[in-house]
Length: 432
Image 1 (cartoon, rainbow, N blue to C red):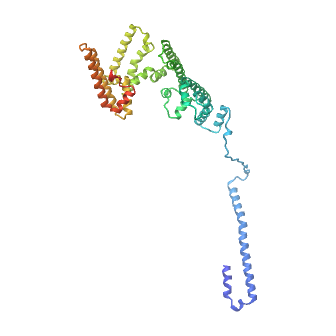
Image 2 (cartoon, rainbow, N blue to C red):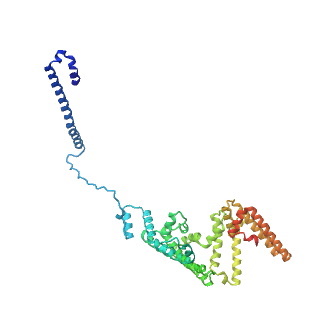
Image 3 (tube, helix red, strand yellow):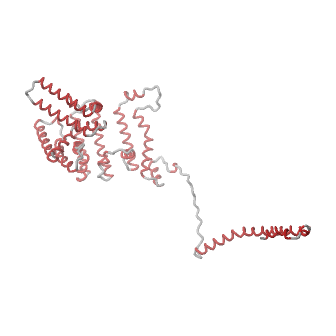
């Protein structure tokens, strides 16, 4: 306001006064005084503001704190984001794991870290066992060397030894099975894990170790068959049966009767054979148990005996009991389901199903071609059992059956699927 008055003051005075030197000097003095007054006002406001804020904060603190409360102790917090693996790494795996746990590292992550580190540590041993050159040159015939100069059986044996060492180390360090972890990481089905899931994990691991121990011993015997190119001797077959008996005895000692029953339903040879025969049937639990119980007593009695060492009387008794078991299964399943069960027992039906799947054909095609097989076998049996035809007539009749069978199977599967069927080892019945 004062500034507006002073700016308008010259227009309010008579012109003769404005031109007077004394008046001009007076006006300059007034303007200077006004400027100094405004400057002093703003300066005082700036100096008083911090004091007011401080006084208000002090008043607020006095209103919320007890009158005699001691001043809070001053806290000093050190903040750093410079985490280094050197802080937890150690040449001693147990110390390394303890440090990882101390910083809250999840157990699964610890397992992954240790497994990866152990793989890296033992990689040179794996490479040495494989026979691969560590520094391959382009002029070296490495493929021929590996094909001709390296024994695959020895390579497999050495790699199994390395894997065994790894599994022992991993189990001791993080209490888990290396093979199980690898299969879980890759989303693969663990054969033993699924079949032993009825057991607690620790007992499951013990049974798995027991099974693998006997599997390794049996594999060592079968490797000789592969190396020599000859069938197993009677002595070697006896060794295999002895191993099976020892495994079952040890399993029975470790598992309770209820657990042993569950184990047999999942992993026994009898259960595996029944599941194989039920292929494509969508069997119920009741059907499975009926067939399993009918066959188990027979298998327990005869499966452990070498067929070549059974005398004629014992063989006749075995075949008689086998027929009784078949009739018992027939009665339990009924005509239609028993026919499907017999079809599932035949490897030819499994081959046909595989060919149909890979050739993008309906599943019914496998059953259709299998029906041709049964029909051809029936006709052949009639001709071979009929004494009236001459030998030449019998040969002509059998050839006609073979030709008609081939024509029917080709038409059912199509040319491409038919060739695939023969290439997989199926269809031998066509030319019998």
